[in-house]
Every structure is written in structure tokens, then in C-alpha cells.
Amino acid sequence: METLERLLLGHKFLAGIDPAFGRLLVGCARNLRFAPGQYLFREGGPADEFYLIREGRVALELHAPARPPIIIATLGAGELVGASWLVPPYRWGFDARATTDTRAFGLDATCLRAKCDADHHLGYEMMRRLLPVMVRRMQAARQQMLDVYGHTSA
Amino acid sequence: MSARLAPSPADPMRPAPWRVRAVRRETADVATLALEPLEGGVPGFAPGQFNMIYAFGIGEVPVSLSGDPADPTRFVHTVRAVGAASAAIVAAAPGSVLGLRGPFGSAWPVDAAEGHDLLIVAGGLGLAPLRPAIYQVLAASERFGRIAVLYGGRGPAELLFRDELAAWGARADVTVAITVDHADPSWHGHVGVVPALIEHVGFDPANTVALLCGPEVMLRFTATTLRAAGVAAGRIFLSMERNMKCAIGLCGHCQFGADFVCKDGPVLPYDRIAARLAVREI
Image (cartoon, rainbow over all chains, first blue to last red; front, side):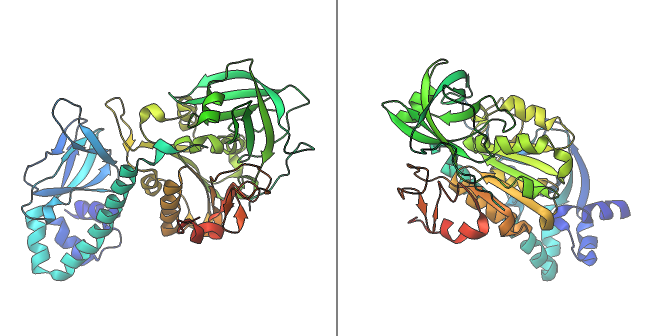
């Protein structure tokens, strides 16, 4: 448990977090490994765990009939996978698939939500770390929508 | 930190005839041409500079040099067919003759970046104007700190210089990361915008020089990401693109605030132009 706590607090997403919060978080965490092609979660499934990638790469995908999955983005070491665990009804809005051997921390969402409800300082700390990630991803998605490389010359 | 070099011809408005020696098709609408002069020798150039290339009877367009500045035998240009003149240049066959004026404009501050970590960030066709700088840097990589080439493209089929990117990526002295906005099933690399690659590269923000080239939207977001990471605005350099016509600062078509992109640019430091990038009217 001590090793898991040390490793978890060494993750970029939790860099500099109050050790007291770290001790709360580690009680909700576990070590996970995903083989290439293995899904962390599928669209519509219960968002009961989210992930902090330690090594490897994860593709966020949407699927449509009669065509290959559409990869929205890939995420790598130091990044967080999944925000639907925060938003009722707690269902994933896309697929997440490991594209390489991937090691990650899984954080039990029910456990963490309960701790955030019980300790609003922890809840605020998690929100101030999550919100910039979500905003960066929203801005990145907007840039992808612009299709900026389609109309340029040099 | 950006250098400015004078155009070489006595009359900078007179195109000289250059023969197309070789053509390489890079993508469906992009070609790389090797050109040799019919008159005189090949002028020297600095990475980041451009030439005006004239498809006789059709039109003239500015095109950055994309070859090795240490190669004294030819000019290399990578061109995308986006209009009548550029389409004619892309379609030029080996042996045909094009008009050429230049080189013009400011250069990437490669020499001044020695001793620093170096981030080279390219989007789409923007890798072409940065390739001469990459050649120069990799020829003397021991003079720099950590070197990273970050490249983003629309999709795998639109990526330039993939063989060279693979060769650079295999070197121990440079980190290469490539991402695409839209992946197809053949693609197993990163998917996402190029600024997102920055957080995965090791560099010391207080001692980093960044060279950026690509669509202006990509430049803005990349520069913002670098600033948020702590890179000084005066150490971020962007290659700007405007409607360059005369290439010598006379006609005013490429005016960008207080600068003419052809003469004062195309390579400009971010601290000088950051405010202008937010003004849509210019």
C-alpha cells in the first residue's frame, strides 16, 4: 500500500498534492495493466472507475456502423482517462482502448465521489486538477474541428 | 535573435531562369522540386528564407526553401497546389524552367539557439520551411541541449517527409513526435493537436528556444501552450504567412502591423507579434 501511495502521488496528475489527500486517494486506487487492443471501458458502460496512465497509450474512440472506429484523441503517460464518472448518470460517452501495453492506476469512482462529498477540500482539489484537463481537451477538440491543415500553403 | 539576409540578385525584381532537376511527389497535392540555375551559381541561403517562384505566364508565389542549406548545388522547394501558379509549379516536369527570385526574408535563429534546448514544432506543410533548420541543427546537435521535433498533420496521408522523420526519430540526439488530427486504421501513433505533444517532451522552459511553422491557428495555440509552460515569448519564433508579392518590402501587400512579412519576416519573434495575432483585421 505504501508503494502504491508513493507511485500514485508520483503521477503527473497528482503532482504536489497534499499528502493527506494522497492517503485518501490511495484507498480508492489499484494498479492495472492493459494489453494492446484491450478496452478500458466502452461507450454506455458504467463510469465506475477512471484511470491515470503510467505508461503506454490509450485511444479515445467513437464507433459508427460500417466504418472503422473514429479516434478522437490518444492519451499517454501522465494523462487522465475519463471524466464521466463525475457527471450523472455516470455512463461513458466513448470507448477507451489501449493501443500499446499500458499500465495505469484505476481509481474507484464510487469510492472517490464519496470521499469528495465527505471532504469538500478534497473535492475542490480534484476539481481544480480535473477542470484544466477538460478545458484543454475541449480546446483541442475545437482545433481539430477547424481542420486547419486543409487550406494552407507555404 | 532573427537574422536578416539581403536578396542576392542585383535586380531583386527580375526572375532568373532555373531548371527543374528532380521532382518528388510528397502527397496528393504536394511536390518537392530540386532547382538548378541556368545562369550563375546557387546563392547561399539561411533556413527560414523563401524564394519567389514564377510559373511563366501564370503567376508568382512565395515558397520557403526546404532543402539542406549546406548543399551548394541546388535549391529545394516543397509546394502545395492551392492556386493556379502553385498548381503549375507542382505539375512542373523535370527539365522544365521556372523563374526564381531570392532568397528573401529573415531566418530561423539557429546559431543563436546553440546551448539551449530546442523545440521545433511544425504543422502540415509547415515542416518544409523548418526542414533546413533541422538539417543545420542535426549536423551539429552537440551544440544544443535537448532537441525535439514535434509534427502535426491533418491525417497520415498528408504527412510530409515520413522517411526522414523516421530516420530522425531513430537518432539518439533528437526526439521526434508526430500526431494527426484525424486517423485512419493504418495509423498507430498519436491522435490530437500538435500543442498537446509539448507536455510529453522533456525541456527546460527557462532555457528553451522554440521554432514554429504551420497554419496561423496552430501557431497561436502552440505559442500559448509554450508560454504557459514557461518559455519566454522572446525565444519563440514563428514563420508568418501573408500575401507576399514584391518580396522586398515595397508593395505593402504583406503588411502585418508594423512589419512587412517579406522583408522583416517571415520569421518573427512572438513577443513582437503576439498582440497582432489577436487582431483579426490584420
